[in-house]
Length: 607
Image (cartoon, rainbow, N blue to C red):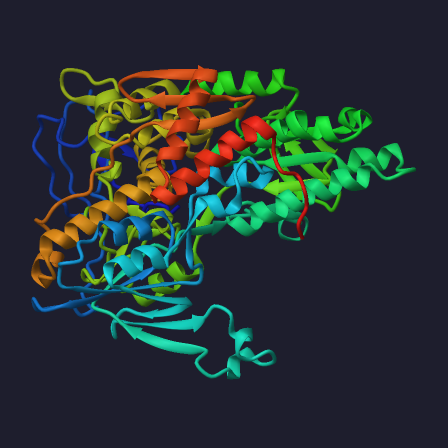
């Protein structure tokens, strides 16, 4: 998060007393006229200006406007109304939604580039990892929608982007197919693709947050290969545990499963693993193994599914604890070792080490390296948030002059910045008298009230309110009070650090569909595609679902109700079945769920 610019300190002489204000001063329980609240004449801007005021008036705070964003126009725009080449990077939710929703009759030549030649229905990935559904049932060949529209597909990775030349550099996904030795010297290994418009939907990559040992000793859980590996590892551990003369300590090590991260993915993975163990493994393996099975989930928050409604988070946490899934909450992972996880209690500071035969990292994402390259190629100042590509209301990447679009986890749509209303929010919460003289330093509750006044216009401020203790401590002075400068720094941090929309499949799908409708409406007219007056993406939250085990789920449906338990499980299974991207996948997933219910999971290890 970027720090706000420091503002100059202004001194004024009032009735023979010299008073100074600064951003870092542990200011007096001072009262000052903020902004335009004072009925008195405005002083000259020249340094050293002296004005006479009433004795009751305290010094005037020097409050500057937030810095304006740097305009960028170095990337040449696309012009004309003829056919345009649109290159789409990725084959995830955003890309497939865009391709399927783009009208074939419009004047676009579409080329999709992705190293993965299939679309993966990620919400059912935990089910695939335990055999509840088969891997092939939740993937759709990307060539199917491509062929239906007459578009092109290249199985390759984009390794560089030239925004000025409107060109991308690609590399074949599997060069060893042609050259077993030196891939860099392989013919047809790399190639360029020119574009008029580039749609970036490459998603994000797992974020280890610098925790030692994660990459070496933990599994990630984001792709179908991860689910396949998890299924193979779990099966192999139970097979090893059944061998003769295995020591008890080794049994505990083999059958200790730790999921790091209690978001939807981590919770559903732990729940599916629980079902697999107690519905299928318990019937087929010796009963002596079950007492040694331990499933743990670790999270820094005080509840699992903390991003959901509080009632859902509390219910899910209680449900897990009653199911003997160990919830290690308010814990920060310090290190992942080969056979254990070291964590620190965020409240007491106590360090603890627990056994972990298999650790799975489901804790956060970060910017795709390709997006970093795009940022570096755009004009300076156009991409201030290094967490994701900043876009405007029509998902155009800032600084690209309307030639690059970004959707899904790799993008953050520009939103109104709360910093622009910092003075107004601060003044409404500060105690002021009839003359407009207000407190300069605010306590924690008053700052919280100031933030609450802006939640309706700036919803992301609610995140600050929910973490007011930490945020206030970071920006308060030694006297545990917050100056206007500290308040502005707090708003700057949240403006730069928070995503406008959650990194979910629901968001990426809606963005892809909207962008396709925007391209359809503009019909290859470059001026309309670049115009500021054309359209605006509005995200509509349709609800949240999460499976929590034993045929139960939680569902938060806006405008309807919060549903928990088996009823929620029926909604979850129905929704995940009918939400597949093709009729073929709908039938496959439905058949898998029926098969699992009737005959149990297939726990055989094929490779």
